[in-house]
Image (cartoon, rainbow, N blue to C red; front, side):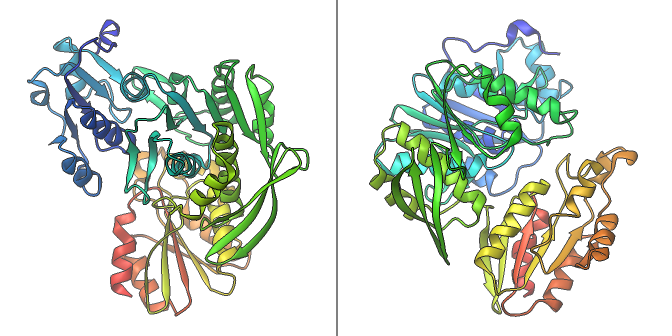
Length: 474
């Protein structure tokens, strides 16, 4: 067991080792540290592209598995990812060798965010996209931001950047920090500006219920300094119930007539959407984006509001939005074969599934939408959302549901049933099918798909590389 007194970052650090380095945020941190001139090593059980290639190209030494021998060089600091437990061989070795250790957000604060204005994006949904839009606006405006985000930005071909400017954009995660710190990651940061996009029940493996989630976000809101600003969505009752706890400056955004920042007229003109932004009742500007769906317009609006607060001019914002290339795995078209589009999306929470399907339907109004869904998160594999999933597939013409591949991790009494979901969808008149494995889905779609179909694949994981395999089969 790691001793509490070792949870510190020494004044002088030259070598850093990251346990569970292949996670999205941990990998980004490893690359940032390498860019800053530190000697960086890392270890993980799951070493595979694209993260393994990404790290290797940056010169980060990666070691397979977890073994105390990976620490024989006695690094000055060990960063412990939240994917490992106190029984991990390298965690035990860290304790026995009395090495200094810290969590990922502690390291971000010390190395990446030191001396910079922290701009945080928090919320159950939309964190990655909103962070990415804001980071791109600041970069396009010449502000040279740093950022660490939970998705790859095609504009940068990276999920991090070590910039020379005064701001760092951080996707502020509500998931727990590490085995020795079960509080949310976002409590480690001290924002100059923060966005709160939404608050819903999620992460059933660490949160008991919605109240538990609200309590966590409540702590986030109350921790924002009085001289900082909170920019929050105006149509989320859970968010509205928390903003009164804040002692900082506040702005809201959304669709309400009295919201300081709101969306005006919107024109869907595939492949772009034009939309008007209204600030304090006055026209702020007309903008263009290739992002699709009402939820992404609100994400964009939040980023616009904060960019304006940080001093970016409307014309600079408009130019950036017109060139924003999106985020990998967020309505990303992976390919087209025989006139059939294969699209990838990270959606897994019922609300995300619903909004993603609505967005795709708005831009492909004449196409047949085939939704392929893999419940894979600790929440989606539990029956807590069983009834909710039955109500969110309305925009899809056909639904294919894979049996969760990791269902054995969930206690039997708590397990989600893909068979039950399909039965309920069929009862409501939907064309739905259940599949035991990925191969069966690929075989079915290769035979049943037609020109003009949009196959929307939704999962927070790799889904057995279904996208490339399906394109090959088509």
